[in-house]
Length: 252
Image 1 (cartoon, one colour):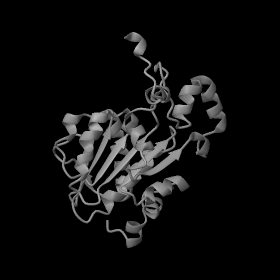
Image 2: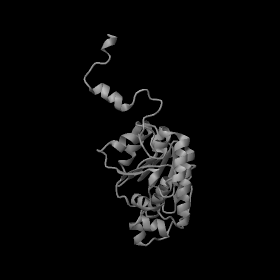
Image 3: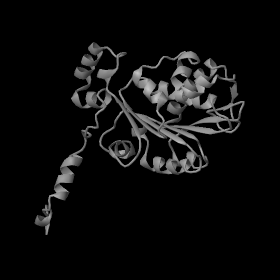
Image 4: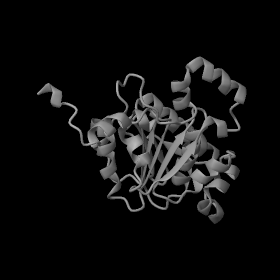
């Protein structure tokens, strides 16, 4: 299927007319983001995996030469679910595809571009080179070692993009570090449940009472809250280390 130039230039128009997916205002911002690095820190059930699947479908349908997209998640089940959503969009776009003959959870389009779903394990990702799109789903639950193994894969593909999407999981890990690190040139998108028109406020109030403050703030308000199992918060530890007093001298 040969797309008009307008669909190549505007992923939102492509999503609406070709994929029958009508993104809301924030989802449209994600689709139109020009940054090679995008982070989504969003509430559960906002639709972050759906909008990223639409982004991947647009990538696949507008390739002028073969390329590779890799989808990583903590488990192969989660990665395969993301790939399933991409598959549905590709079918809506009239694309023909098959497996790549090597990877069980994969798509290969007639033009040679591939999308491969993998679990977030170092030994499963090091054999892939020069992907032009890397999606890390549930990024806050992916080990830091996997992220360090993935980043160098971007070096060999000009214009390669990385998309991290997750709800928070405390003040730890690469997802938290990248969110607060102003040095990295990320497009950061935060959507708490209170700003999602598709989530009923009455449901949120029920969840607040059911889950408790800590879990509700993390899962629905997208806050990086200290884990309940931590004896000392990172802020307290930082203050102890930096205030210039030797707190352990009494042990000598």
